[in-house]
Length: 437
Image (tube, rainbow, N blue to C red; front, top):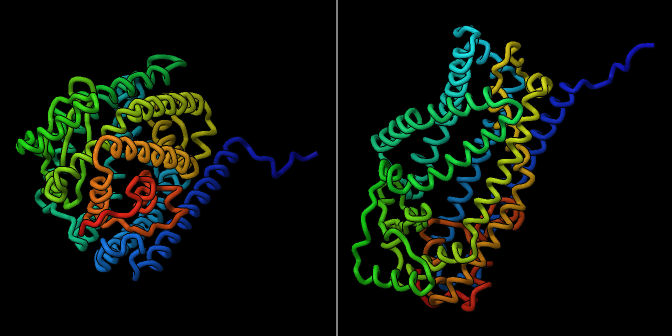
């Protein structure tokens, strides 16, 4: 009796599951993006009633046009990204690259490590080049069109060279160490590699504010004595301390405004974009800082770090199991190296497959993030003027061209921050304050 001709091998199952997940992910993202474009366009010609006396129609329309332009570019990136991932996997691109590199190296252990590192570097370089047109278009066309871009071609090139140098000095040794750990520590290599990644992440939080960030931006101590006294009093009142208050020259690259905490422990510092200080009053700066303090007060940063490390541990464990399954490689269009040394291959394949799951789990993390934002807003309102926070948010929504009318379903999937009308409705000053923005 003949074997069942339709019986799937594990490799074919892997191919089928991957293809279905990719199609479902792309279809979902396309549906959400088109909903967002349609919804924002439909509400472009009228400012929502609650904002009508505070947001001019031309600013509302600018935000709508900016949102639509970003979403349309995102659709092109989605289509191109789908072609690229198929090219790397089922169409054999990663397999061809790996085989070409194998032909340049011997099969002894040392050269196996070098070949694996060369595969990671080659993949990263090719991927960056494939994404480059979209990055340039976003910066020099979309951001430029709406008045946000301040990056010159010379500055862009300088940033790229600095990033390349940083990757060479830090990324290459780290990648080599990770590949060596994966090859040398036996069946539990995934646990040791996770420990290496976790340790590096914590180290970067310590050194990034003082050693790396200044390579790209200037950070000057806040020299406005009155504002410094004001925010110092706020931090003392809320029971917080920091290494200092700094102003970053964000205007060198963008007109967007922001403020953030960075680092932890002794290296924790408060950073204000110069664009933020130019736009907000002292009371509004107080309220925005209080919002950031709210994240620390509620332990959001620690919770997010703990969640990230826990999820990454599960991901590394899954990678540890998949890397031992031949069908994981062949089902994704890659022939594993027969003499071993598949660490880089498994890592790259996993990095391409894992984001597909994020397409469907994203709403859970987005909802949790929005919950944290509401809690931070409540903290800010309790320790500063709620009206000042409302007016600051309105100014930031206007100056950053954030749409006031996003699609509700799109919000559920992608928005880490609640839309303006939801945030203001939760505050004691439920209607925008009578401040022209």
